[in-house]
Length: 299
Image 1 (tube, rainbow, N blue to C red):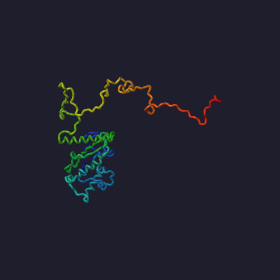
Image 2 (image 1 turned 90 degrees about the horizontal axis):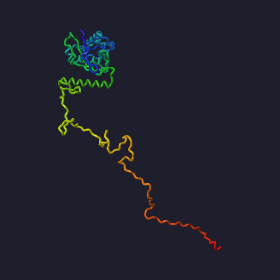
Image 3 (image 1 turned 180 degrees about the vertical axis):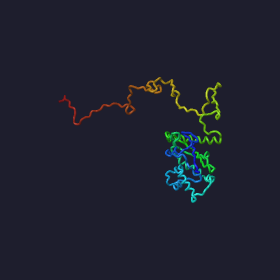
């Protein structure tokens, strides 16, 4: 009797489902097989597959075809290469776990496309869940069950930003599950206070001098206001400022804060050198030598 493998998937992200039965055509559309064969005591390796069944082009076809699987087991368990061991010994050596990881890497590789409910999803991450996986103890009923947790995103929404959001959401849920398992309540809440977790108290009120509560208590951090006169604040009017358009300019004669300049039409004439005023002198006429005046009367 050939041992078989059943795969159960639990999805989170854009689709939340539990214990879905997996078929190979959900990842490989052209694969019409419905049975996955599982070697219970032989560790699967790519080199062993290529040597045992060299005509098989795809490693998956070795475990979905009964003829290929029989040939693989016959080669792997030959007396020259294999020493017969029990299921208990194989489990202690970690052979079933290694084979689980082999199939996980084939079907649920990162960025692989998986079809669920007629919609395409991209696999962001996959994790083997050994707690819900089962390894048979009876040799007559060799039905292995492998459980895998998938974080998937809708193919239409597959962007870097959306992937980051989903990864944070899944990490938050994992922390909540582990915390609740140990302490009985989730670590993160939904962001809103609930009556059974946070006590509902009225806000502290501020009491005035009259003994009447007329407002909430002052904030620990006071608002910093700009150092500006009150009439500069929005909605305030300077009573000393004339009523003018705030976007215009005040005429020079209406601004009381500007000094008034008085112009003098005539200015006193200052001296050139300072001190006493210089006396005016007549300029002497220059005489020409060799000439003299002649009295016309004595002629």
